[in-house]
Image (cartoon, rainbow, N blue to C red; front, side, top):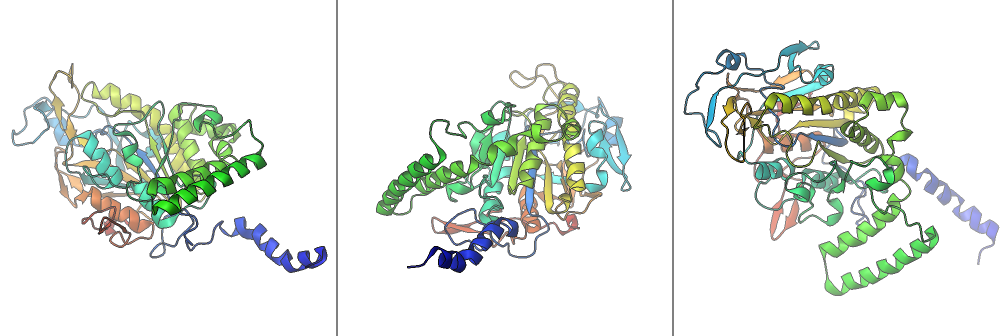
Length: 465
């Protein structure tokens, strides 16, 4: 038996180290297996520590944003070769209704749609030679987000959390925001599939302005905190007995982890999602809009150790401009340009851009020809059809080469023809920036080692700083 003085003497140093733990990076870097999201080391020194994916769902037109085609404007209204493949029959050449200008020391050409993003032109690494597999939204969403357009596979954010864990055990490591509902294919875009459920994305409906409504039932108003902890401990014991009697059960393991995470989130989630805590000047910089608010929330989450944040603009596929492309793209660009421009400047000012990877783009591009009015697709025309043969995306921060344009489509903007980059190559490059060999970040399931890039993909060295 120890006296109180002896107890304090023998444990005092240990208590001090417990107090220092938050200052030293939260959990131990090595994963002990006790917490799936505990921090882990990548394969090698990483340039990027966290990711924010700005997904322009619906297929933003590269020809009207980051890939100017003056030849297309020259042939506007004229017939193009019939050998050009499309999902549906399209009409004549359709020159962009938007003007392009050069920005920054790099002289990067960017559409008038994005004047705020253009102010950070020298931070952008634009890939003009992306290509995907098919011209359909559903499989292209899944290919971009999960690496496979057909089979259930873990999302990129789930892989990143599996590989790195999270820096904040009181918040989910992978958070997805979309206001007013879910996009096409819904939660399949952020699932964990055969990875443990702790790695899946947590969906937040950002149409709400009250932080208490963003994550429903975040607090239990009817039970004292100590009593709630006792209830969860009892439930944990019951679940663990159930699990021990039935062997490995991914769903039950995920349920146990979700109860624990939900309990820890009560102390931090509301504060993290409350943008009213930001100075008014900062809120004005991002803009008093739903998209501006969720991008600002995204920065706050990254700042608090969330590993992967994905932001969708609207439910469904808003950039799918089969009709009235000029009106559609002006509206959507006006909505997202200021917040994204603010994000780039804000991350730079905070010293976060150098180790935060920003990803911008949709699931494919759009055709250089005009859409012919088709029942159920286009009523008046003046839009563009889907085009997976060539499109643009850009990266910023996190070790990429700023002020750089990689690859090219042909003079009409139809096919990627120079330094082509498949979605698998993009994923391999993203994992490389996070410190992983994409061929070695694997998970064994059903007798096979799976990875985000399946059996494909190469790191695009030209994108690296």
